[in-house]
Amino acid sequence: MREALQFSLGKQRGLRALSNERGIIAALAVDQRSALRKLFAKISDVSAEAVTSEHLIQFKELVSRVLTPYATAILLDPEYGVPAAEQRHRRTGLLLACERSGYDKSVRGRLPSLLEGFSVARLKESGADAVKALLYYSAFSASEINSKKHAWVERIGAECAAADLPFLLELVAYHDDLDEKSVEFARIKPEAVTRAIEEFCNPRYAADVLKIGVPVNMKFVESPGVSAAQALYSRAEACAYFRRASDAATLPFIYLSEGVSNEVFVDALGIAAEAGARFSGVLCGRAIWQDGVGVFVRGGPAALQDWLCEHGVRNIQMVNAHLTAAYPWFEKSSTVSPRNR
Image (cartoon, rainbow, N blue to C red):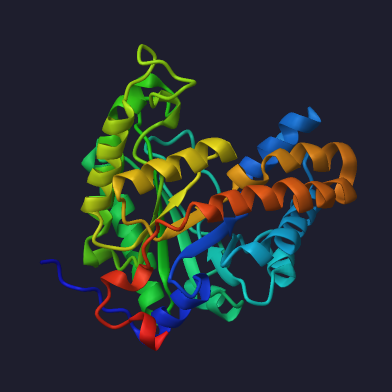
């Protein structure tokens, strides 16, 4: 039998602030920086450098104001997200990202780095209920690459432990020599996701919750829109991969949407439920608000607000409706129960 987790009082408080009364995390992610710039640039037909900080700030503010009444928490970045944090619903928890956006493409391995001028202690002083760090991770990478990543995560875990603040580790599976959208990567994605979970559930990293992508590429799951000839996985095989990844997790984990559409992400949550995956919620971003970027570019803040009130709210409610199969984050803990929440 696995040993139950021991959450400190501070980490319990932080995780409660991120979740509902059932212990389910239904969080909204708006910490995108370079990815959001690229979306703006593509729609505006300008370079990413031409997208102003004011546009990013205003977009995040509107998303926060309209959608956080339907979210248990919001994930933001301290670079452009502070005004949005102030606009969130009063009962919505706050996650702050500590990593720099993107990576140096001239260096092999997608090595992570921390934001300059910030620390876990400073993020806590800014009002964060928890800290999130994103890591591109491949178990297939050279040991010298992964050794650097392991040490990087250990340092963040130690800072969070010292600050008594929950540490959410976002794991983005990839391969150094494959396109993540390719059929070749889709074949190895179940193994890539599962092996990353196995690695970072190790107590040495001091992570409290893992934020993971689903263990299959939904584009290749057999469905009414994907024939058996086109599919890499049958529905039953996809369920088996979800179960395998879930069984590998000794920490609570939540799913990220990986930039897919709302319909695709909801379908993935349906497979997770069928598989009996013991996920504790979601931290979902672009599957909820990405279509609003074009509305904002073409019509301005008023048009975006109208779109969010109709389509954004519908999207987040669709995701929330599929969290009935989720399990409380505190189910793995020996120190927390529904009675003492």
